[in-house]
Image (cartoon, rainbow, N blue to C red; front, top):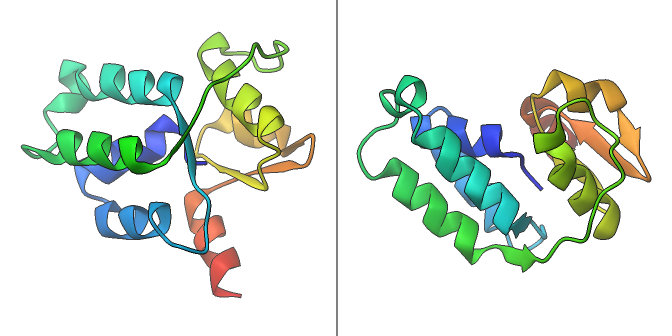
Length: 130
């Protein structure tokens, strides 16, 4: 799974082609949930962020998110400092993710949770290239 900030970077255009290709890659199972879509929508509409997103990019990213396997989450355990990130913990635990791609320092500081490795986008790409 990729966190909302990865998708925001994608909408801004920094990684649009690469992240879209990864998300829809037939050998990868990239998951999504309503909470992730809601966070993406919320952050992408903030004036400080929206001014950097080219027209139609947010809609394109949201369209990609809806194409991913959608997961209904159960409650999480209160593992992270930021309660808004709890859905990512729930997703990683519930679906036994191999990787959660993020640049969020709080999540990266966890390192690994119940088998899920929290990893930066660039490190994930390097891992795929090995």
